[in-house]
Image 1: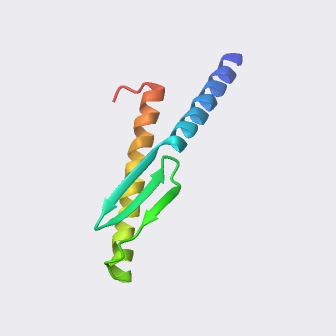
Image 2: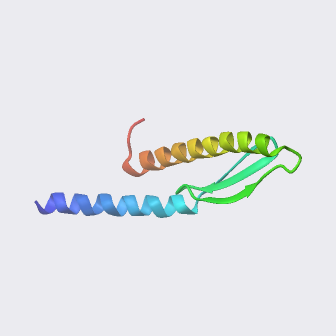
Image 3: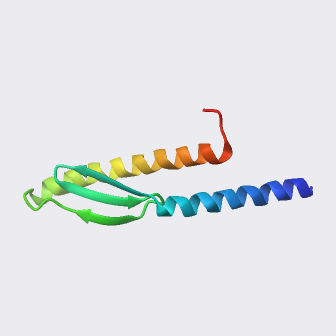
Length: 89
């Protein structure tokens, strides 16, 4: 029973370490003159719109940019998780 508790504590410790590391990561994506910077824990920290585009175009490209950033963060999270628990794939 104590082994299981120790394993659980180790897993919690690894998860917290991963969360802290992800918060330090910054991912920047660009598209059509728009720039978005997001942290590894999915917090948007900077956004630059393209003043030469219409509101509608900025909105359309921003949606694409956010989806791209989220996808990049998810890949980063998966890579970190794999490296922390030593999965063989």
